Amino acid sequence: MINGTTKVVGVIGNPVGHSFSPAMFNAAFKSMNMNYVYVPFKVEKENLKYAIRGAKAFGIKGINVTIPHKQKVINELDKFSIMANLIGAVNTIDFKNGKSKGYNTDCVGAIRAIKEVCDLRNKSVVIVGAGGAARAISFQLAIEGVNNINMINRSPKKAKSLAYDIKTLLSADFTDNSKLDEVTIDFSHIDLNFEYGSLDELPKSIANADILIDTTPVGMHPNIDDEPIAKHEEMHSDLVVNDIVYNPIETSLLKEAKKAGATLIYGTKMLLYQGAESFKIWTGKEAPLDVMEKSILESIK
Ligand code: ATR
Image (tube, rainbow, N blue to C red; front, side, top):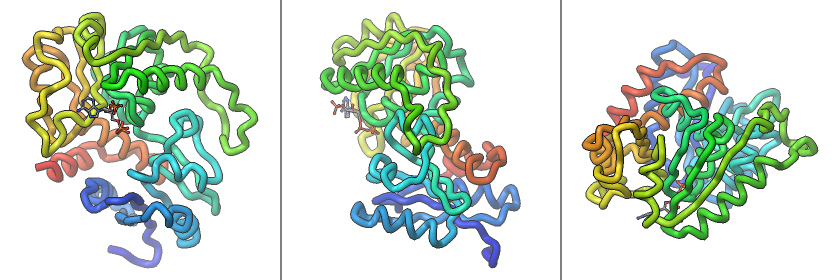
């Protein structure tokens, strides 16, 4: 029940009406008997700075940030984590002692799902797409010790510029950035070979890869009959295949991967783990994964 001591968290974005997060977080808080409520807030681009100031003024505990504010919101924050800085996007804000700190939990969410099924050290990964999700995932993969990333994109120029950006940032010095709380990640061990290419090079790169991650919207509801980026003949049974699309749960790519005998990682896992990470940042507690996953699966039905 909402009362005088209820803590408020929520999501800002536009649109936010379709978000699964309110159901997922409110189910989690209820199951743990925690006095929190999670609310969706539709915020227009021009109101972003007022929204952040307002959240602070209202004593809101935490905010998730979604499209179109993930990049712009960085300018409105007092501090941010090293990963949010590298990725250039924030999806979680924590308010503490009148200060805001931004995090990116998308990267951790995606990688936790993969680490459940395989070790990432010295692996060769193909990422399809060169947008925000590909960027977040690439940084985290580099930190986890993969030794080869091949970024395949419809427009290879975009993959080239992202690959360049990532390589440059991984060797940059951030110690003078006063908005970074602390540089807690050791980059010195990273020995990453970063390649890029066009979609017609995909079959060849899959043949040599351990992990395939599709970050494009291909196959996403309502376009569930989209031709998948790869067919089963192009995959192999030692491959781990992750589609970050979570609606439908089993995309056309994952159906093909199943036929090839590959190990599947559903997009719902990334959604679950990025939420679990936000939950931990705000509450200091481990998230109730089973409750949150059940809520996601019910929302998709
Ligand atoms: P996000 O920020 O969620 O990663 P995005 O920035 O829109 O989303 O990136 C989506 C990626 O999917 C892009 O790299 C896009 O390719 P382009 O860079 O050529 O635009 C890719 N993509 C989108 N639709 C696609 C399609 N039908 N086939 C192949 N790639 C597609």
